[in-house]
Length: 85
Image (cartoon, rainbow, N blue to C red; front, side, top):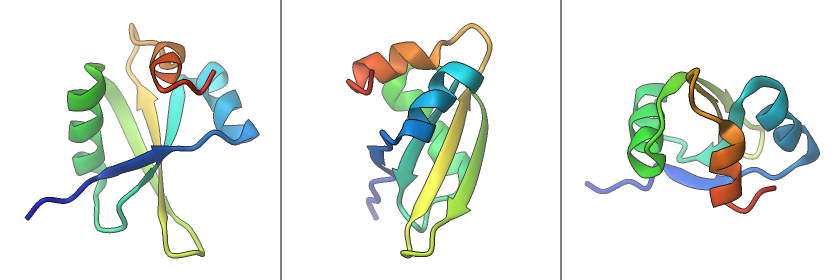
């Protein structure tokens, strides 16, 4: 069964500040996905190394992933590919 794990990046003011402050990208993900799923998919799609993934279930029945990149990889570079900054 195919499941699109990564939905779309979040471009709120807080999400953009996390890119520079803590090397973290915020993505809306499928509600059935897990942290290891998100980590594998993000590493495959963007060719970067992920150090941690935190998930948050939102009140509107969606799921948000906070993806922290490993040292040596820059979230700003990924954000430029996504045209967030």
